[in-house]
Image (cartoon, rainbow, N blue to C red; front, side):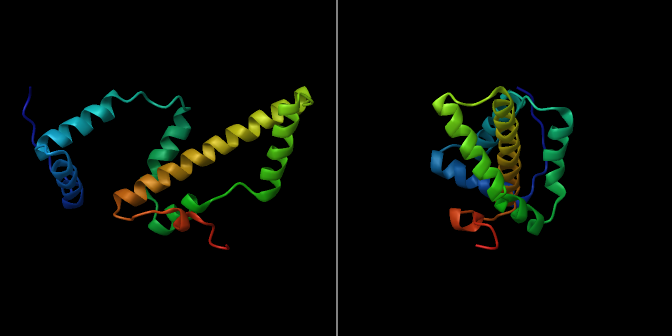
Length: 139
């Protein structure tokens, strides 16, 4: 094992301390385990531009991250997806509608991933997030 010294923000060290106390482990061990997990995690099967966009979100303001975390699919899109999913379930969907449903599903997946990334950065900045926090601002 190699010894390597790095500097980390106090807030990150405090989080590691909390986990260490909860798990009755040394802080160094908690940090090592987390680093190991980060490097062992398979990369998302995303195009490079999408990966870069998600990484770049780290530089957005808190307000912008909150806006992304609260983002919703527009109501007409949600309604269209519901119609298409019903047709798919009933077996009455056309090939063109199935392609549309697939595209809308992919769009929803990208939105979910962006929202999750925004929430990740917000929690790393010390925010505690609950479901009420994620309601769109106009609700």
